[in-house]
Amino acid sequence: MPTGHQLAPSWPDAPTGSQPLPFELDHLLALRVPGLIATRRHIHSHPELSGAEFETAALIARELSLAGLQPRMLPKGNGVICDIDGRPDGPVIALRADIDALPLTDVKDVPYRSTADGVCHACGHDVHTTVMLGVGMLLAQLADLGELPGRVRLIFQPAEEILPCGSLEVIEAGGLDDVVQIFALHCDPNLPVGQVGLRVGPITAAADNVTVRLTGPGGHTARPHLTVDLVDALGRLITEVPALVSRRVPANSGLLLVFGHASAGTRYNVIPSEASASGTLRVMDRDTWELAPKIVSQVVRDVIAPTGATVDLEYLRGRPPVCNDARAIGVLNAATAAALGPEGIAETPQSMGGEDFSWYLEYVPGALARLGVGRSGPNVDLHRASFDVDERAIPVGVRLMVQTALQALAAAR
Image: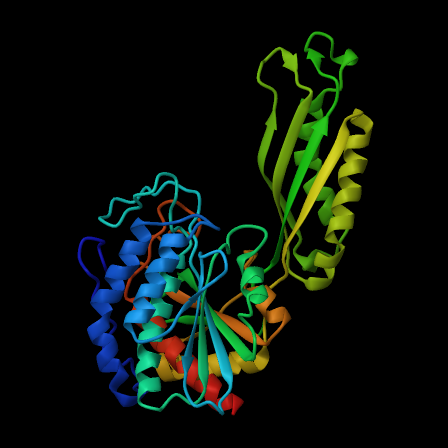
């Protein structure tokens, strides 16, 4: 496995049971692997937060231009859309990669550690971006040979990690115009390299943001009866509301309300006049997601009412579950078997994580696959500051998404 101090080896020539890419693209990919890994490490060491991915987008545009393509920037300049034009009578298939990083401090001891204070690619978006750049290079070759049976649209999307979602910006900019199917990968450290997790139906949860602000007259801790004790009210909010909300919905909906931040007061002997808590609500099914804002609002107000505090509730709608289309998963199954052999296909459970790829699927059918990036030894989960990947997953991802594009174009004709 890669140690982080040398370029990782490429994936073996052809996994057992796999099919070669057409027109010797496997040979071209093998030549490109060191450059792709170097690109991933550059992106990893120069991460940019959601909405500010300007240098990353510029790098993507340069690399695509060098491959002979004509990328166009999103209106804000922090994302890229690039069409690879094949036969004009063919369908349009889209492949999406997200490009933003997280507000975490990178704690890894590797040469490509983040150079941006408090910013880190802890979710694998640097891998998603690099894979899609590799796909663009190979499909551009096919297009030049006249062997691409349609158009493939590469979407390098900003702001997946925040609300409002960057996918909505892409859609507004025409990213789905004429598209008949869309596909994406997401790194999965729980799967080894060479495995791809697939699932028909919901593969992620819906995810919303909840912020509750409490106000009331503060005062001396010696005379709480003359105040509204917001610390007590805040304690009730964060301990009682999550359990009560879950009792208002079916147990199999998987509703999970977790507060990740709570704040009240600055002095040990002063009851504050303001307090707040914020967190996420996640739920596995669409019907419960539709009801969640009303349920949360009612439970919060019922819990806080006896304290006398004034409640200001901000419920920010995030993203529905990613629901994989059965036909699109059929394409991914065939593509995975072709790229990695039948042993590369792994069943995967629905995750409680959210993914704004779901918004694309509100408009066109498609599917999200999980790319195995697990390293030897204990794996580090996504969104941890020490997260890293086995870089052999990069050529695996490229082969998979090239096969996905070709399978999807063939099936849609």
